[in-house]
Image (cartoon, rainbow, N blue to C red):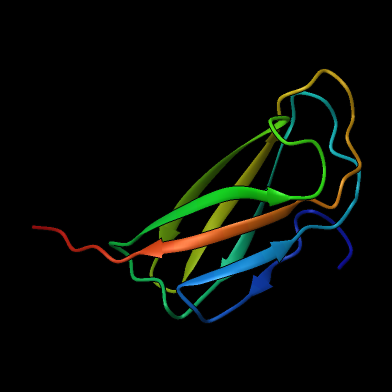
Length: 97
């Protein structure tokens, strides 16, 4: 991997992603795409900080589409962090009623 914005490919409803330890400036957001055939457009994807790095120093978001989700990681601190954080994702299967 070359950066925190590198695309990840997994085809499962749950998994672990270890991010690159590239610097992320304070109060800055980076996003990357998880390409995953297990994700439907109506699904929700939950992201948690599993390990690595400073727990509580980041917030996460997930915007899904059919076959992928864009995961955003925001450095909540004022300083730059160069940590290889480990994320766990879970796809929650859902349908529109």
